[in-house]
Length: 154
View 1 (tube, one colour):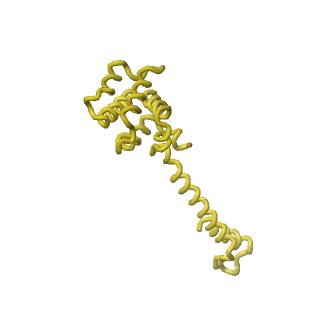
View 2 (cartoon, helix red, strand yellow):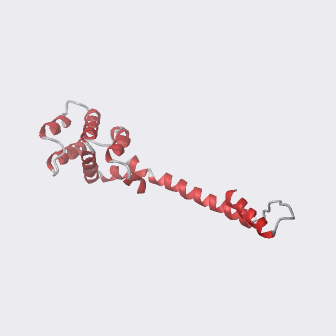
View 3 (cartoon, one colour):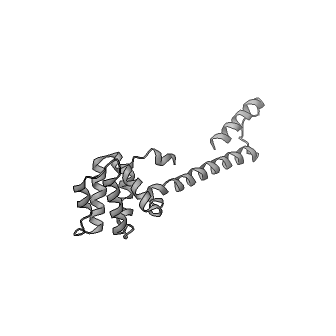
């Protein structure tokens, strides 16, 4: 969630655009509901003229949806945020499957795995009896200090 909260809605929409417009994920009725919500619900994101343009059945659904997304991105952050709100209300499963909502899981897994591997390596080095060959003339405290430094960096 930390990653998503720092990403702007416009950037997320740019990232999700291909997913939303490919393979007929959104059907005509859902797109119409989203457009009507953006037109009728406060704050009004689309004017009546804009809503009619994006609901025009003469243009393909893919074209209308692509144009709508580009239009919202040009208009700014609040418009993109309202698009996500309308998408969540009208197509919740699709909203949950968006790539921008899935980014956290692989990154989180990689971070946890890296931390665990680093900790395991540190633990192994410090507890395996690995010794650094040092001159016998050095005091024991210096030898131990070098051993700990070796464990920490390797």
